[in-house]
Image (cartoon, rainbow, N blue to C red; front, side, top):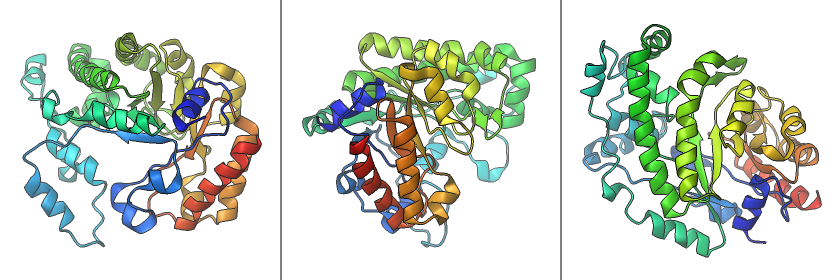
Length: 351
C-alpha cells in the first residue's frame, strides 16, 4: 500500500497498512529544527501544494528576509498574505474595511487578484508529480488566515465584525458572499488540479468553546461552507474534505458531518476529547492530529512523545486516524520530531 492509498483509507475510516502521519512547521523554523525537505527526510505520507505568491512583493520579501535572525516577525507566508490583503495588525486592531458602513463601501474594496492564472500555473503538474511517487496531496485555497470567519474579522476588525453579526446582517451577508465566491473559485482550481484532500479552515473556537454562538455559525457560515464543499465534490466526488479549527469546536461536529466534512484537525488534546469523538462518530469522521500540547512539544522529552503516540494509536486507530502534532512545531527540539516519526512507524504497524 503506498502513501496515497494509506491516507485515503485512513481518512475514509478504513483500516490502512499502518497509521499515516504528517507534520507542520513554521517556515522560518525549518533551518533550526528540521531539514529543508521534511516530507522526504521523514517519509511523511502527505504533500501540500499552494498557489504562487503575488508578483510585485520582491522588495517586501527582501526586507523580511534581511532582518536579523533573532528578530521573529512571524511566518513569512502569512506576512506575505497580510501584505497582499492590505491587512496590518501591527498598526492596531482595525482592518482595511473597518470604517465601511455600507454594502457599497464593502463592494469598493479591491480583493486580491487570486484568479491570475500565473498564481496556479504548474499546479496540476506538481500534483501529478507527487501522485507519481505514490503520495497523497492536499491543498488549501488562498485566504486571510481562514476562509470566512477569520477573513471577515481581519478585514472588518474583530470588534466591528462581531457587532456586524448582530447589528448589520446585510453587510455580513455581502462580505461573506464575496469571500465564499473567492474560496469556491480557488477550491475548484485545486480540485481540478487533482488534490486528494481539500483543506478548509477557520479558527472559530477558543480552548473553552466556540467564539460565536452555534446559531450564528449556522446562520452565516454553515450554508456557505456547505456550498464550497458541494461544488468541489461535484468536480471530484472522491475528494476528501478536511476542516481545521484551533480550540474546542466540538459543538460543530454534527453540522460538519452533515455538510460533508470527512476529517477534522487538529483535535488538540487539551481542548477536545478525541476518544469521545471517535466513540460518537465512528466511521463518519476521521481525526488528523491529536498528538501533544504545545508545552509537550516544546518542553517534553522524546519518551513523552513516544508514549503519546502509542496512546493515540491504541485508543483511536488505526482506521480513521492520521497522526500529526496538534500544534504547529515552532522551535521544538529536533529529537522530539524524530521520536514522533519513529513512534508512528513502530506502533502504527502494530495496531
